[in-house]
Length: 489
Image 1 (cartoon, one colour):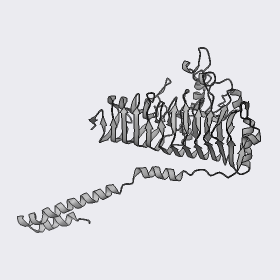
Image 2 (cartoon, rainbow, N blue to C red):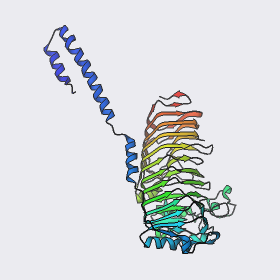
Image 3 (cartoon, helix red, strand yellow):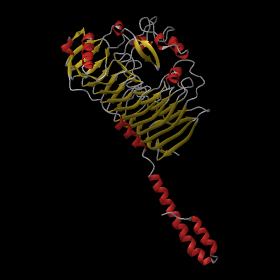
Image 4 (cartoon, rainbow, N blue to C red):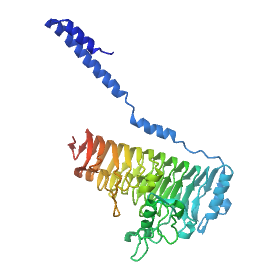
């Protein structure tokens, strides 16, 4: 019922007796107040449920459907003896499958050695239970070079172990294992760290002809076709990369011993990563890194990694600004994060921005897990992060922080520039943490652009050494939130 306050005031002015004023005005004002409260409550109830957006993303990401046609790799000459290289047999089966209109390329039980596998449209590569695919340790097997990326910068480099470019409707599914065979004798030493097999005098990725040259090419807008690395260089290949692909599913398989990032959808749309196990502790062994991607669902997965479990990215520095495709509409749910630098991370390659990220019903717990939720950038990367929603998160322990937002991130030197990042609307709800590490909240914004609109609702963090360390952050709202049993205000 609408109440006309002006009518009440007019009636009040037309009657002058004190008795009438008390008898007429007070009940009506009380009624008006109650009516306004009811209308405000109805208005609040009418606000859209933000998690309906997550449901809409899930509904919009359709599972690829493949023809009921089977192509067994053994029929194309593959031998499961753990010795014979089956690169040609695998790729013949994939080509035949795609040429016939699609279907499933079956890898039956056994151990298969192969070089890179290049997927084509309408092909589902199915790794059977009891099957293990061992990727060759010979770097020359990953030639010729292909259009790929390294730490957010596009280039020509060794082929990813599994690769697709411009394909539609593709899958890697099954219950078997994909073993990159990277270790301290191959691939890993190129990172330059002693613990990964690098010895003094050996070349590594930080040498002048590697990353420094690629960084200059990035800033100079060198055409990708001229950014040639590969032989004579030490930039490791990705494990599984889809470049400019649509409708991709990765389901059920196990990835282990990756040279570099594990699952990397790049400039791809409509991605499902479901029930996957990543058990890989090498250098930069991120579990899943969607970059320049839209409509992504990562669910029911186990991540036990040498770097970030999930890292959402959008290009590094000039490359990100050139491509200018934000990563957006990403749902992470029902996942388990064990070891890793961060559970769900945004950045640091983030120059095109990230928005609309939903994380729910995940468990994170390991003495080697450094942060639960992390956002990292700097003024060379710039970019933006907005609309991040985390709900129903259970954390056993983390080393450093439950939520870390850092706009001064930088492993290498000279990580400052003119691109001020903006970070806003970060929400944590129904989060419980047994051992909060050094900080419950660790936020380092910038004076020119503070981190804004952080909300913690029904969050409980126990056993943190410090409740928080916050610099340049505005509008932090605590609702029923306790850190070390203290109600935050």
